[in-house]
Amino acid sequence: MKTLVLVAHPKEQDSLTQAFLKQALTFGNQDIKRRVLSDTQVDGFLAQDEMQDVLQAERIIFQFPLYWYSAPANLHQWLADSLITPYKEKMSAKELGLVVSTGRPESEFALGKKQGYSLSELLRPFAAIADNLGMRMLPYFVIPQFEYQTDKQHQQLLIDYLQYLELPRDHSFSQREEWFINRLAQLTKNKDESHYQQTLSMISQQIAERGERLTELKDEVAMIKNIEEGDL
Amino acid sequence: MKTLVLVAHPKEQDSLTQAFLKQALTFGNQDIKRRVLSDTQVDGFLAQDEMQDVLQAERIIFQFPLYWYSAPANLHQWLADSLITPYKEKMSAKELGLVVSTGRPESEFALGKKQGYSLSELLRPFAAIADNLGMRMLPYFVIPQFEYQTDKQHQQLLIDYLQYLELPRDHSFSQREEWFINRLAQLTKNKDESHYQQTLSMISQQIAERGERLTELKDEVAMIKNIEEGDL
Image (cartoon, rainbow over all chains, first blue to last red):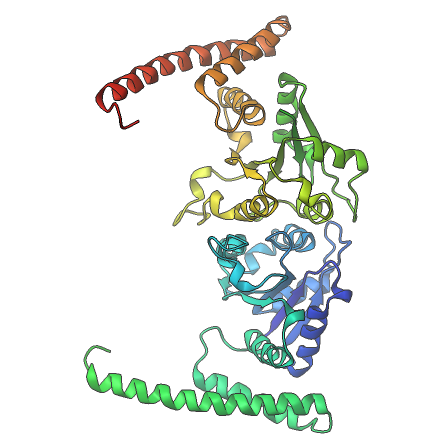
């Protein structure tokens, strides 16, 4: 699947989160492209070859920090400049994902909590865009307070992020397992580098944990089937 | 009350809606200021005197066309540039209003309708901003399909718009009546111009209709009071 990540960050060069996510792509497959939206864009800033990437992608990801409960201005500018006739009608059947980094904990985004509104509520304009264009909305992917996360959380983030970009929307356990095995094979080619080694051990651990969970789930499903035959 | 209208429209000069709303302000009182956000703004574009208007205003209105279910990019840029320390903390207790023009009928903004989401849902980021800053959110003011509206609808819009800018949030009937009388007095000074005459007759009609409604309501309230004394 061809995935295009459009990064909208006014200070992309200074962002540790964006640097990490960019680095993460070196572990990803060849079908992921990443483009940073210019902050000084003008009408029609999107060059022809950039629009080709959009049109060729099966999955488009808007990746941005939450600015005043919305995307930064340059993403809004991009929407106005790019989602025009005749491009508009060519967006249908593509998937739309959101990778949103926040400076506040995710738990604050709820009724009665400090931010008052859920991310599902605040990101609703993107759902409306997806509906309007006939795109399929993916669940949003939130990265809360990246700089406060531990190394272990960062490693987990790397895996979750790549899976968000690469795996089919309603992927099965076996597709997820397969993904791990593929990445494992890729990583062992680079076994000299300690950074890769870390990730390798992380992934191995994940496989083991997920394998156990899978076995448990299979048992549960078998049990349910026995109890409620006919109902399934 | 000092009201500041911040117009965010990438093509403000070409917009019939914005031209109409600008013209409407000539009927308004002296406490309304209007500023058009620049489309080619850069970081810190807001000059010192412009920020003074923001700080002095008791009611701030964001006036914009709905672009992809949100505000145009230049309003998002303004938010990022202006709502910063130390200005942020000076926003509390101000009122925040939204004047939103749409290219689609208002009825389409609903579950299962063509746009799928209500304006209350789509404009939620602004409610979150108001909450964050301790501002008081006014109901939004929507102008659907201005160019398809009749002259009579435009006259009504003029009145409703000015009242939205000028009247206190939870105004009473008598405040509304008083507003009409004040405007009437102002307009009779310009009785030579037919445009003003039209508006004059419109306003007179409004006063008559509202007067009748007021009498009815007073009767209803008196009746309820008689029936359910103690409960009120």
